[in-house]
Image 1: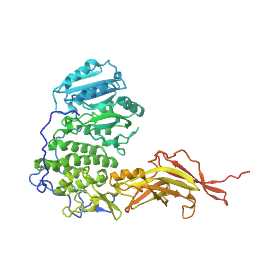
Image 2: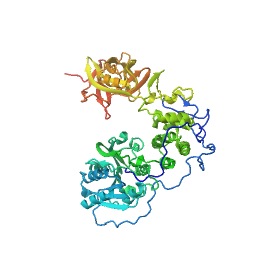
Image 3: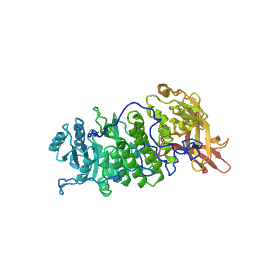
Image 4: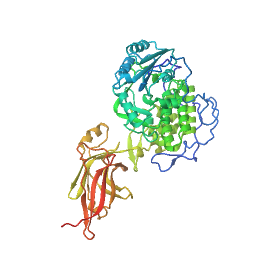
Length: 621
């Protein structure tokens, strides 16, 4: 989004010690219920995340709150209706366009030209599009550029207004004028792929979708790749779409009008999170076009993206408070609450608490206010099951914050894992990341906070499958991410789907030259990550044949005592033959004229399984 005129600047400067920052006392003392961490055998004492209803009286100098929970703030609606603005009369006889493209513009040159060219060049055709661009008091020639395009293309409608300080008011003004069956919101410094609107509209029409995401490409900016996996139907609670709260999506306008969904006009930062969340919650179906680069999200070379503007303490956290309240009020599904609120706790740590820690030395009042309101959010909304929604590092940071270990939190806030990756090591069957303060007596943090065992994955690939001398031979590679193969062994695990019965077959380690070089770059020995497993189905069950049923195949990898298991087959080598295989006879029972057969097949997810059937042998002759 182009930059709108700034509010009061956010102080910046070196870290300062946080021993005397005015913040609430820590969460409950030892003996209270604790937070179960992934892979832990029990709660971590003391338990800061099981928050009692009463909260202690804040010490002097703390920003006061009127009651437990979220601090008092102006109770503007989450998606308020805009103030009425006199508008030109809509043309009632004009044909209804398929898509209304909404663009709020403030000082977006020279990027604006590329943005508008990408809209004009849409393969859907301008005859099916209307463009409503609102110039919010630009001073760099953006208004003249909009007028130039409007003079060339009758589908363009340009409105000029005095600056409002953010994108919400111009977007709402455009939404009030939109006539299209669908609305697409574009930031004026980004641009679209040529087929974007055609593909998004096709998905919406075919699937009856109310919101359609398009794959985003970051140009110097990060994008939520998991959110853009292609899906005709993406469940809001169980898919990853809620990772994407950027406005650039296709919305069914009828849904926006029915629910009165608009941008909150008192916010210039995080306003899209409330708008998109409201649209998601109103949608009957959400879809994702993930097989085409739809939207190019740009970091401006001049540093004038609106997200780069300095923020006050209130501007840094108020949108998080309001979107959390919206989710809490409207989502009762336990999975939905966990995942959606967990996403905002991630955002709170990264976008509010960490910046607050870093400016304490120059503006302790800023730090105090953000800490106060961040703690109130933890009290109001945090539940232990949200731990899995945060990274191991952010969970560690949040623990220190809620426990009142502010010096420890400041050190963890200053730590950048990209610059200094934390070593992974194994001990007694558990894996730990050596983040700062690990086993440091000054901090006294439990080992379980550093335990990442359950977050590690068994990386694997199935390269080959063949029958040889009555045996099934499977080849490929497997390893535990971050751990080498020096002390590693692999086993093939067959599990019967209905009963859960299991059989294990040891695999032979073989060289994996294709992985060795990559592992060397990352400081991990992967030279012997290859495996070869020969499965003798005729004697698998303690010398007896494998039993009838559907047997799913897994690869079990043990590295330095850490055991991780992965479903085998989804990741496949280029030479793997996936064609249907005829049944092979495993054993015969002449006394009852039956035989046991096995047929390998790949599931709809690409995983390998065996169907084992006992059948009668028909007499011949």
